[in-house]
Length: 411
Image (cartoon, rainbow, N blue to C red; front, side, top):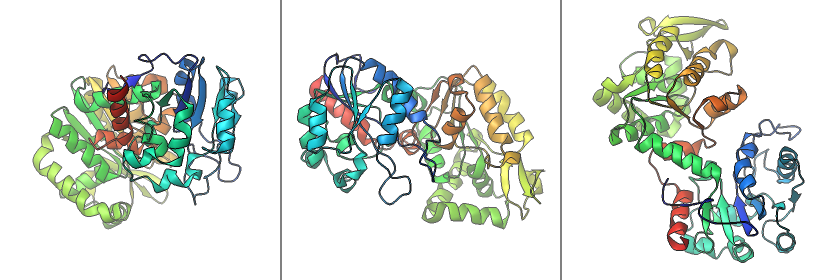
């Protein structure tokens, strides 16, 4: 693991612990009920390790202006139900009510403060350096009340704010169990994967997928990159295959201002690394609400391409079965439509059958693993969408940098 402090390095029994999590969850638009509590369950191992500490949870839900921007009373109640013990909620982030509640905590008790994004500094200081974050009201008020800061907010690790990165100089900042697992798995995927290493990159965010591919190629760690979904369609187009005007327009519309950059990356990958690429040889399109299979040679058609075909899956299968490591980020199809879920479900099945180390990227792919109850059949199922992609791209991760900075100071 990168040089950060872990829960094995510091004894926190009887200590006051500020615990930053990312429990931002999908909520029902009308009732506010949890549609998925996976991120709450993901922090249970750290909470178990802190069972003899005084724990204060900091978290966020959505952002101002969105329908699911709400306080964290429901999250505290749901987490309490999962744990089987009450969690006290305080409708305050760093004011007098929060401080009084923190000071009244006993060992083994858990307190949940309010949605940190209800405090204007959390959003207004997102581009601030550590010196400025340290003198924010949030850090000035909370830091003196604690002995240590623990973070499991991996899904927000690509962001910067007082509660995410601001405590690095004032408290020992420690990676929780979830953060530790995420860093270990994704570092392995980028720097030292068991070989042969296969990356399956799909979904609609083609620019991110191409950046991940380029990073893995530049590092010399990848043996096969299978492009599927909208990303696969764009690679076919870059190879000179006419995918039909409607499908081209969809890609242009999805990428918006990023289209030109993505097109350049796709063209470069096709020109320089075609030996590493596995692209669809057949697809499924929707005609009169029916699934119709076509070979790539039968394109273009005026119908939307919604899935990869059986032949493509048959080419992918032996490669996955012989792999030492598989990274999968992004669905292969418009899987919300039952007729077109086939390709994505089959890739998931292969990932659960292979002997390889399997790392599933965040977002839709991770949610699918949870919803189908197979999280225990993959080696690592990431809780971070954008954070996972950013780490795989080799980009800056402010939260991990803050952990490294703090480790240097407090080790």
